[in-house]
Length: 324
Image (tube, rainbow, N blue to C red):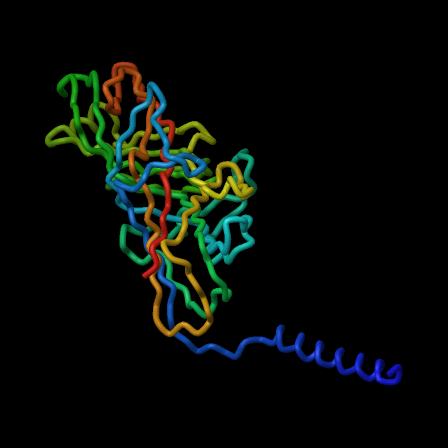
């Protein structure tokens, strides 16, 4: 029996070694052309959530409205296997170009806005070969949004002559940046362009009124020749929905990495032959929030003293991912 032991040990070692070689063997080359396509959805009726994924309420003294979204851009997308998966431990399938930050923010990098992919609802934002995605089962998706463009209703108060004293329920376009840090060369809000040539932190916004005729021309003549107003919401005040915080998943402050669950698990086998489309459905339910100084529930610009009711939050209010 003792003579058999060394022989059995060698056999067991060889068997383990062969098995281990099989486990790390590179998969056969996959010539599949199947694509994973990602597109955005903007849902005004989707539940409005707080930072931890709980139903949220509007603070006393604030007011909100649901914007009419035109487009959005994300700079980071990660497929996440479980609720315990930490940031970047999943499959990062997209990351936008960045450069060294020029401002004195806490961040060393800034997203380059001129290189950003900007898409409307139901347009293909991103398309990648499925064969390039790590094999696995994914339950969540993380998307870090950098830019959003939407139409907002507002009031202009105390305008100078020959304009009417007040112009209520007017439309304007808001371009807002909710990513951690963005370098902006030029920004076209709707039809007008603002030159910035600098970094802007989370919460920067620019607003272009589109007043009822014939007041737009008079507005640019007597009030604001550029036609664009800009400002900064409180840094760190943007809602970023992370329902995985309860499982110990921490995200960097100011990152705007919104986390959402798949409506069904995304299972990547490496043998896919058909395209898969993911719709990232964002809740825009009352996502535009400001301090309502006069308690009228409307966003007011007072040109008598050049003040705007302060924006406090433009963060998206939840994410659901639909697999098709």
